[in-house]
Image (tube, rainbow, N blue to C red; front, side, top):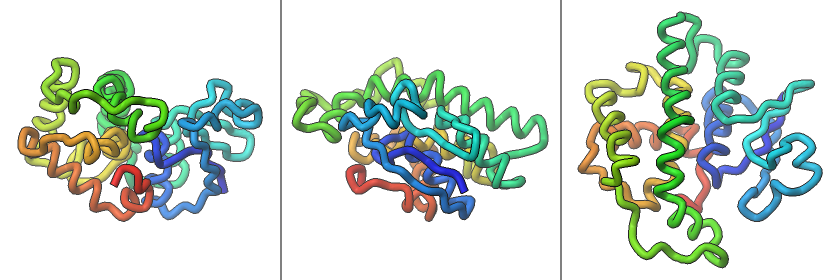
Length: 210
């Protein structure tokens, strides 16, 4: 079985943990608290030169980037679950993975950095002077896009859970703490509720974000 170097404190780190549970896999988990400097240790840098998590090691394969790990695990262990061999369906899943990495995560990382940083490192990062502005033009259109896409469907790619959902859901790890106004994006909020009800999502949670 493979090894995951990760931490559920991180949105990216949580994704492969949740997928492993969803697929019934039992990898070796090595917790690396990058927020406390563990990513800078020489032994970790040997497998992750940039000191980032998550990292998967499976035999001779060492793989970084959370979305790449999701694809690898889904293809190797998931069969037709959470992924697809059909080109159009697979392209739709990939569209969300690329969107998550290029738009969703960068915008949310900037918006939530003060409150997330203070929660993780209260002795280093000062408390934010104001709550996140969810109407910020850098994030509001992305929230609206998700809300529109999820209206009338259960998951991002239709009626079934895919790795697209686990990818985009990663950053929602912080939403409860950050105070997303659910009434403003009802379809998105219902989807978050469906994700949070998954056994795999609960199993991958860290109490810090409860």
